[in-house]
Length: 133
Image (cartoon, rainbow, N blue to C red; front, side, top):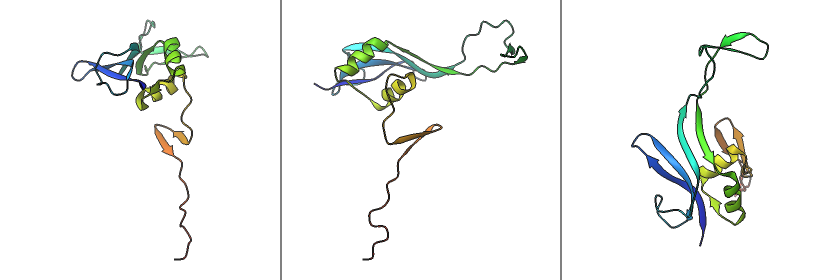
Protein backbone atom coordinates (compact mmCIF):
# COMPACT_ATOMS: atom_id res chain seq x y z
CA UNK A 1 0.00 0.00 0.00
CA UNK A 2 1.84 3.08 -1.29
CA UNK A 3 0.64 6.36 0.20
CA UNK A 4 0.91 9.67 -1.62
CA UNK A 5 0.48 13.23 -0.40
CA UNK A 6 -1.13 14.92 -3.38
CA UNK A 7 -3.58 17.57 -4.55
CA UNK A 8 -7.32 16.91 -5.00
CA UNK A 9 -9.08 19.53 -7.10
CA UNK A 10 -12.25 21.28 -5.93
CA UNK A 11 -13.85 24.65 -6.62
CA UNK A 12 -15.43 26.25 -9.66
CA UNK A 13 -14.51 25.84 -13.30
CA UNK A 14 -11.94 28.67 -13.55
CA UNK A 15 -11.30 29.05 -9.82
CA UNK A 16 -9.66 25.84 -8.64
CA UNK A 17 -8.98 25.13 -4.99
CA UNK A 18 -6.93 22.09 -4.06
CA UNK A 19 -7.14 19.99 -0.92
CA UNK A 20 -3.77 18.58 0.14
CA UNK A 21 -4.64 14.97 0.95
CA UNK A 22 -3.11 11.63 1.88
CA UNK A 23 -4.43 8.84 -0.36
CA UNK A 24 -3.38 5.52 -1.79
CA UNK A 25 -1.34 6.01 -4.95
CA UNK A 26 -3.65 4.01 -7.23
CA UNK A 27 -6.93 5.72 -6.30
CA UNK A 28 -8.55 8.42 -8.41
CA UNK A 29 -7.62 12.07 -7.88
CA UNK A 30 -10.91 13.12 -6.29
CA UNK A 31 -11.69 9.87 -4.45
CA UNK A 32 -12.15 9.78 -0.68
CA UNK A 33 -8.73 10.37 0.97
CA UNK A 34 -7.37 8.86 4.16
CA UNK A 35 -6.89 12.36 5.58
CA UNK A 36 -7.14 15.98 4.43
CA UNK A 37 -3.97 17.83 5.49
CA UNK A 38 -4.75 21.31 4.20
CA UNK A 39 -5.93 23.60 1.43
CA UNK A 40 -4.00 25.28 -1.41
CA UNK A 41 -5.47 28.21 -3.35
CA UNK A 42 -3.25 28.80 -6.43
CA UNK A 43 -4.92 32.07 -7.51
CA UNK A 44 -2.86 34.99 -6.14
CA UNK A 45 -4.78 37.46 -4.01
CA UNK A 46 -3.80 40.82 -2.55
CA UNK A 47 -3.20 40.62 1.22
CA UNK A 48 -5.57 42.38 3.58
CA UNK A 49 -4.12 45.63 4.92
CA UNK A 50 -4.91 47.46 8.14
CA UNK A 51 -3.41 50.63 6.65
CA UNK A 52 -5.87 53.55 6.62
CA UNK A 53 -4.56 54.92 3.31
CA UNK A 54 -4.12 52.00 0.89
CA UNK A 55 -1.97 54.02 -1.53
CA UNK A 56 0.87 54.84 0.91
CA UNK A 57 2.76 53.19 3.75
CA UNK A 58 5.51 54.13 6.20
CA UNK A 59 8.85 52.34 5.78
CA UNK A 60 11.46 51.55 8.48
CA UNK A 61 13.01 55.03 8.18
CA UNK A 62 9.66 56.70 8.86
CA UNK A 63 9.23 57.91 5.27
CA UNK A 64 5.90 57.71 3.45
CA UNK A 65 6.26 55.61 0.30
CA UNK A 66 3.73 54.30 -2.24
CA UNK A 67 2.18 50.98 -1.24
CA UNK A 68 2.02 48.25 -3.85
CA UNK A 69 0.52 45.08 -2.35
CA UNK A 70 2.24 41.88 -3.40
CA UNK A 71 -0.22 39.18 -4.38
CA UNK A 72 0.17 35.94 -2.45
CA UNK A 73 -1.05 32.37 -2.85
CA UNK A 74 -2.84 30.87 0.13
CA UNK A 75 -1.44 27.64 1.63
CA UNK A 76 -3.07 26.29 4.80
CA UNK A 77 -1.44 23.09 6.05
CA UNK A 78 -1.46 21.04 9.26
CA UNK A 79 2.32 20.74 9.66
CA UNK A 80 2.29 18.19 12.49
CA UNK A 81 0.12 15.73 10.53
CA UNK A 82 2.19 16.32 7.38
CA UNK A 83 5.39 15.53 9.30
CA UNK A 84 3.71 12.40 10.66
CA UNK A 85 2.72 11.12 7.21
CA UNK A 86 6.16 11.90 5.79
CA UNK A 87 7.66 10.03 8.76
CA UNK A 88 5.64 6.87 8.11
CA UNK A 89 6.68 6.83 4.44
CA UNK A 90 4.07 8.75 2.44
CA UNK A 91 5.62 10.12 -0.75
CA UNK A 92 4.64 13.65 -1.86
CA UNK A 93 3.75 14.28 -5.49
CA UNK A 94 5.92 16.82 -7.35
CA UNK A 95 3.56 19.81 -6.90
CA UNK A 96 3.11 19.01 -3.21
CA UNK A 97 6.86 18.59 -2.81
CA UNK A 98 7.38 22.09 -4.25
CA UNK A 99 4.84 23.45 -1.74
CA UNK A 100 6.54 21.63 1.15
CA UNK A 101 9.93 23.04 0.10
CA UNK A 102 8.35 26.51 -0.09
CA UNK A 103 6.93 26.14 3.44
CA UNK A 104 10.17 24.67 4.77
CA UNK A 105 9.03 21.15 5.69
CA UNK A 106 11.33 19.49 3.12
CA UNK A 107 14.71 20.15 1.58
CA UNK A 108 14.87 20.57 -2.22
CA UNK A 109 15.97 17.55 -4.22
CA UNK A 110 19.75 17.33 -4.68
CA UNK A 111 20.98 17.93 -8.20
CA UNK A 112 18.65 20.82 -8.94
CA UNK A 113 19.74 24.43 -8.74
CA UNK A 114 17.12 27.10 -8.17
CA UNK A 115 17.58 30.03 -10.54
CA UNK A 116 14.59 32.35 -10.28
CA UNK A 117 11.49 30.41 -11.26
CA UNK A 118 13.37 27.86 -13.39
CA UNK A 119 14.77 24.68 -11.88
CA UNK A 120 17.81 23.67 -13.90
CA UNK A 121 19.06 20.10 -13.85
CA UNK A 122 22.80 19.53 -13.55
CA UNK A 123 24.48 18.87 -16.88
CA UNK A 124 26.79 15.87 -17.10
CA UNK A 125 29.62 15.82 -19.67
CA UNK A 126 29.21 13.56 -22.69
CA UNK A 127 31.07 10.22 -22.30
CA UNK A 128 32.01 10.00 -25.95
CA UNK A 129 33.20 13.57 -26.35
CA UNK A 130 36.70 13.72 -27.81
CA UNK A 131 36.83 10.01 -28.70
CA UNK A 132 38.17 9.00 -32.08
CA UNK A 133 36.12 6.29 -33.78
